[in-house]
Amino acid sequence: MTTNLQEPAFAAFIGIDWGDKKHDVCLTPAGREAPEQRERSVLEHDPSQIAAWASRLKRRFKGGPIAVCLELSRGPLVSALLEHDIFVVFPVNPQSLAKYRQTFAPSGAKDDPSDAEFALDFLVRHRDRLRPLKLESTTLRMVREMVVSRRSLVHERVRVTNRLIHALKAYFPQVLDWFEDRSTEVFAAFLAHWPSLQAAKRARRPILEEFFRNHNVRYQAVVQRRIEAIKNAVPLTSDDAVIMANELLVMVLVRQLRALSQGIKDFDDVIAKLVAEHEDYHLFADLPGAGAVYAPRLLAAFGEDRQRFESARDVQCATGIAPVLERSGNSAWTHHRFRCHKFTKQTFVEWAAQTIPKSFWARAYYDQQ
Image (cartoon, rainbow, N blue to C red; front, side, top):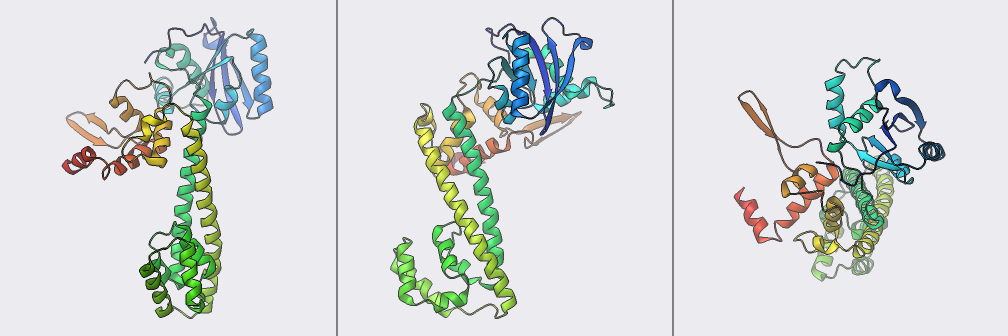
């Protein structure tokens, strides 16, 4: 991996050890790379402080480009740095920097060089092994942020649904048999109307029929089967202490579930509009099993840099789906790649599962494993 041949002549080099509230900074002007000439400072994580610091550097180095090395490729600090055209950001893998630090300062003593100094040293000595961060299009960056946020809502909906199931099992388990898919609006709406078996049994048959009809349950046999199950159900318990506490909890969780489902739909709508504007989206939209959920995630995973991956093996290693082979003496063992971007790895693993019923080749390959 080498840097671009058109790389600018940098006026200065900076290593940053980032944090939530402050960042340790180590700077050296070009031509003064000796350790004793390095300048150390602390930068508060405050937009005005970062902007003022960037302005001082721009004046000092007369607008010349400044190379910055840190263990991030995205996040608030990277966003703040990229607001200023003087900075060229070189992300470094945290594990690479940790091994570099361990090689030259294994003791971990307090007077050892700081992480910011090691980042600077790595940048100055091994810049040919780093790639400058290329700012992708606003559309792609929005898609990338959106799909991650959407997935966090899906995880939260699963968590809330599990809590809801646990509460229902304590006093109203029958409803779990009536609705197999607990992420649907009809399930949440039913509990919002009738949060207990007693309430459901009091509902008149025409009211229940209208409810199911309004929630697109069109099969009359299904509707009648559910209504008969409601009318014939026997309460699990008559203990008001159990019923009232769990019923109130269910009502709270149902509100959360509906809000999360609406939030996921809102994200889906925005993501669909964004990817429709991107010229590369068709490459992923036509893949078997990708659909409206995984095609945007695959687009975000591959990005816009066509030079980033030279082979399928590069994709497998970068995304974490390629196994790791370790050797020691005459022994060798294979294990999952733990040090990777978990969301990207999850994207490929989940999408691969979706291809099995959609692709003859995927089905055949899966069956032969």
